[in-house]
Image (cartoon, rainbow, N blue to C red):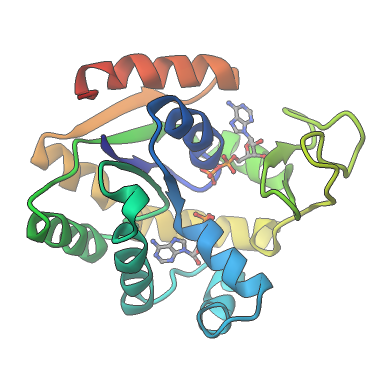
Length: 217
Ligand code: ADP
Ligand code: AMP
């Protein structure tokens, strides 16, 4: 299955992506994770992306598209993938469509996680990420047994630079202006599926998987 998750920052895309991708046995490709990995390793790509990310702006399309093109050409993405965080504007969506069509394929479905702004702010302000394995926690909604330490790998948890209040507000504006138009773009393509993404994480995963069932091939 070739699947895209769309929704505002904090909607739970990363959280759901790990369960959905593992259930469907497809790789989860998160552009935010790839950028953060490059920033932490000080690569040329990371140095290029860092200032945009810190401000909560989108990294320029030519940089992002080149990175995704490379990643989608990897063998493990040949028979399906789950994209988390890409596309994030209409030009990226159009490029993805052309890229897949050149490979004689297309997206099967775009799953929109629907959550209101107040919930998104609550989720982002408590988000904590493991420095070692990347697993996402929440200081109140999904706390690790020991504060600041990842239950899965014992790594140190940190708060993302772009999860401070000012930047959160800016990222929500960027979402409304640049990413939200993708909802009607994909509705027009006839492949948009929306689910209510509020409630316990495992119930949302169930909701997502049962909505996706008719697209599984
Ligand atoms: P996104 O990838 O869309 O930016 P994340 O998956 O990183 O969002 O989730 C943002 C924060 O919200 C994290 O701290 C995560 O633990 C928390 N979270 C995710 N899903 C839920 C949920 N259903 N209820 C409460 N908190 C959630
Ligand atoms: P995320 O982890 O999805 O919240 O992404 C974190 C940051 O990475 C974003 O605020 C952007 O600066 C950058 N980023 C991630 N995906 C994209 C994309 N598709 N296009 C441009 N910038 C992106």
